[in-house]
Image 1 (cartoon, helix red, strand yellow):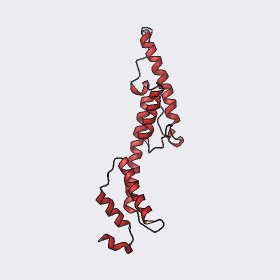
Image 2: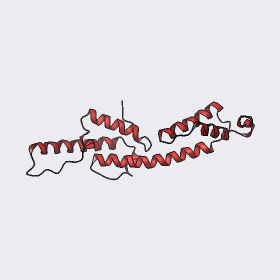
Image 3: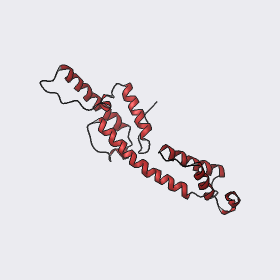
Image 4: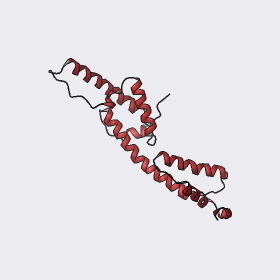
Length: 163
């Protein structure tokens, strides 16, 4: 199974796969815990070892996450050297994109019109697919509203269905 490239709209799937792969590779320490305090001359061997393990996890996690992000998105993400902060900034960007995308989908659903360029069945499937995508973004469209949107999308010759 491969990690889906984060494209701005699939954070949940991409994040879940990134976390799974990092966990399997035993590199998820940096995304699970905060950065340990810097080591000093007084640090114990255990603290030094933990710090080195965390640093390796952080470095490789960052590389892995950056490789799983679409190029057009990478440049807009803040520069950070902390894997946990990086994942948080990707999540925040995703939430903003999700809200914008949900608005676009809702607008499309409301203004869709059946123009005969596809079959009625395809038109209905397209509308129900939009509702399913909205649901995956946290917006639920009641079935009664969906029926009303479908009826409103039909041309006047389908008038008897509206009554």
